[in-house]
Image (cartoon, rainbow, N blue to C red):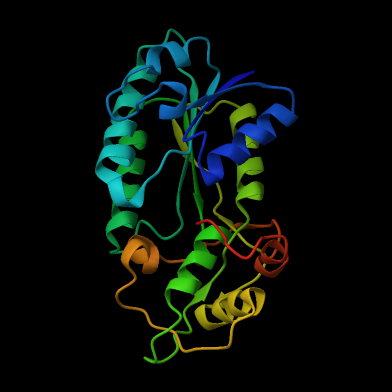
Length: 250
């Protein structure tokens, strides 16, 4: 199969590209690095030529209007012009339908656009990825303002990528469908995440803070507990963290 991966140079996209190639598929990464600008549609027509599926992994909480919203508008329009529209697999956020967090609401708006497009599409909601959870844990360490114990099920992006590829190469749906949520194998509180990160970094324990997260603000209040029937899998946060260098990318 020919599979196009938007956001092909990101944390999730690179894993999708790797997994799809590992299975022997022809994979075309689509991002500015490869001459594709989702926000304007530049390069989309060429990259979609002959595509059987598109894994839509492009996302940017700090530029969500440009990347997530405008990019999806351009992508849907380009797929609609195909003689045989490619199967679109979109990765969204667990809890986005109920959350009031700005980025979660953006993700839900994108879901609605896909649902209304009448194109063959599979929407897969995932909890926060391990790199993002580690980034947030570090961001919340430092100020003595009490400890947050909000539960979460962070998930390994490599496992999510494998599930997305399975959807892409699987049965083509008639219209838009929602797949089961994806989440990690263990439930952790925010302070447990921070303790694990501090131990990994070799730093002493400190209290956590929730407000003023800066770059992490867009993710800070997104629900991290999946709905009924969710699939749980991938490496645990601790196992994933143990394989990382001291500086962990989000």
